Image (cartoon, rainbow, N blue to C red; front, side, top):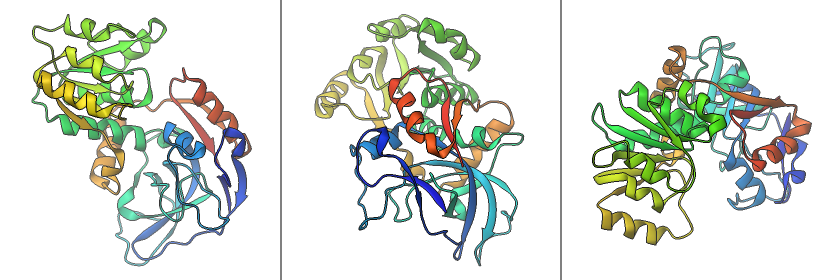
Length: 319
């Protein structure tokens, strides 16, 4: 089969189309004929070596955390909920020996795979698993009561956008930041109030509340400057730690704010969580945003565009 991989770490130019053995579904597993694989920031970290993956001999490293396609093989002992021909989506952990989702075929345990949202294209379905599960994990850890006030940074991005929509689906009041050119987009996601992004955003969030927000989902990786927006006893969920995590934790403790990490791989194989996202997409409460699509031989171009910033929606490789 064809896959997109790298034999050495570096810039986007190290990505190449490679030949790999075609996998087959073992017991309790299904094989997906992948039609779309989303390009995520984590893929660029794998490619550059910031997030190193142990390479076996001369085998290429295969990135890719999201796939969508069609089941074409089912292993023995698999439950009847999935069948050959089903359109599905899944998250892949690229640190596994078989690598990630930039490949024509991917074999996964059945608990990692759910039906694709009704009416969604393969490219649209591929945008949901990793970013949706990251946002959901963040909100689950906040443990908020209904009608809480949640602020979301990076609300125009993939994780931030899903955080806005999931918080609204849970019944919360949502404050969000946005550049002026993204304000209409963020409003369409359901944010109740939008403030300008950039320096001073914590003050702008705080000004919309009496004592500060109950929680922040920090998809923009702003970190410690957001603590002043949060009431004592509140919570901040971060998607990636900063360069001085220890100082961040000390500052949060001083202000009486709890920090939680949104780590998507805590939801590896959580069919219940991924299927919840599918149901919300079916109901129109989650948006599936594709910015552009690329053939495998142009994967490097997709990585360059993502690194340049400003992408709204997800870049998708179609296989």
